[in-house]
Image (cartoon, rainbow, N blue to C red; front, side):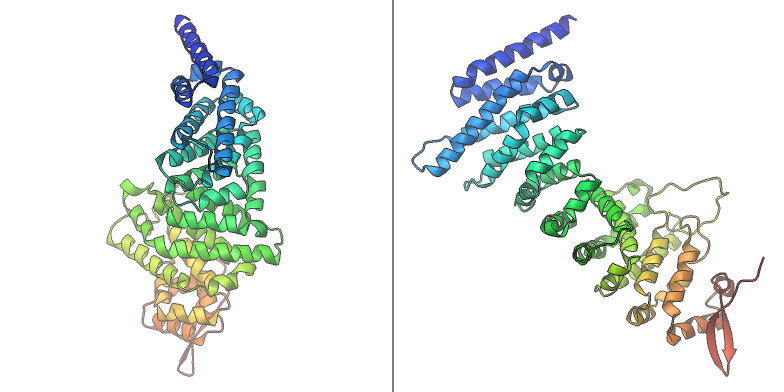
Length: 456
C-alpha cells in the first residue's frame, strides 16, 4: 500500500508541476511533460491519471498548433520551431504511454478532442518546409499515439477513420520517411474492419488502396502484409455482384499482387528449413498464391490475369523449384502418404504445390495461348509428376485432373503429348485412370479421351 501511495504522490506532484508550467517558457513545459512521460510507462500510474493531465497536454498541443499556424502566415513572427517540435513530440509520447492497455484514458482523450487535434497537427507538420530530426520525431510520435489510442478501442478507431480517411493516410503513405509510412500503415490496419475494407477498396478511394499496395510490395516483410492479404481475400471471396468500377479496382490490385508474387516467389524455398518455417516473407508468398487462386476463380478477373505477363511462367517455375527441392531432400515439398488419417500436418506450406497447379489450371481455362505456353515450358510432364497422393498437398490429384483437362480441352498437341508419354511409359497409366483419362490408338494416331471410372 505504501508503494501505491508513493506512486500516487509522484503522479500528483508531476501533474501539479505540469499545471504550474503552463504559463512558463517552452523549455520548462518540456521538462514537466518529460517527467509525466516516464511515470506513465507504469500501469499503476496510467490507471490513476486524472483527466486534468490530458486537458493540460491538449492545451499545450493546441497552443503549439496555433503558434505554428501564425508563424506560417506571418513571416515576421518569431518562433523557436525546434523547441516547439520537441514539446509536441514529448506530449505525444506522454499520451502514447497513457493509452497502453488503458481504455479509460483512451476514452477520456477521445472525448476531449485529442484525436481531432492530433490529425490537424499532423497535417500541419506535413506542411513545414524545413525537414529535420525534430520534425520527424514529432511526426513519428503523433502517429504512434494514434495507433495506441486506436488499439482495441472501436470508438477511437471510428473517430480516427472519420477524421483521417482518406486525406491523412494519403499524406503519410507518400512520405519519404519509411517510419512515417510504417506507422501510418499501423494506424490504418488497426482501424480497419470489414466495413472500412469496403470503403478502402471503393473505386473513389482507389488511390489510397494502391498506395497501400505499393508500400506492401516494397516492404513485403513488414508485419501487416498478411493482414492486407487477408482483407483482400475476404473482399474478393464475396459472392455479391460487383460493379464495373469495382472490377477495375480488383484488376489494378491483381496487377500489384501478381507482380509481388513474381518478385518474391522463390522465398517460399526457405520453408524447406525447419529453422525458417516462420519466415515472414515466405509466409506472405504462400498467402499471395491463395489470393491469386481466388482471383483467377472469378470470371470477372480471370481474363485479365490470364493475360498478365510472367504470371503463368512464374507459377510453372515455382512448381518446378519446389518439386525439385522435395526430391533433393526430405522436407515439406516432399510427397508423402504416411499419415494414418488421424494426424494433421501443421506447416504453412501445406497445399502450396496443390495451389500452384490450381493457379496453372485456372490460367489455362479456355485459353489456347496459355495452354501452348505450358507445353513450351514442359509444364505438362511436371504436373503429371505431381499428381500422386500427397499428404503435404491435399487434393493435389483433383487439381491436377482439373489442370490437365483445361490444358487438353480443344488442344490436340497437348493431348498427343500426354498420349505419347503414356505409350513410352513416361506417364503412369494408373495416374491417367485416376484422372478419368485413357489413351486410345486410332489409325496410328494416339488419342487421349475421357472415360467413366469403373465402380470399385
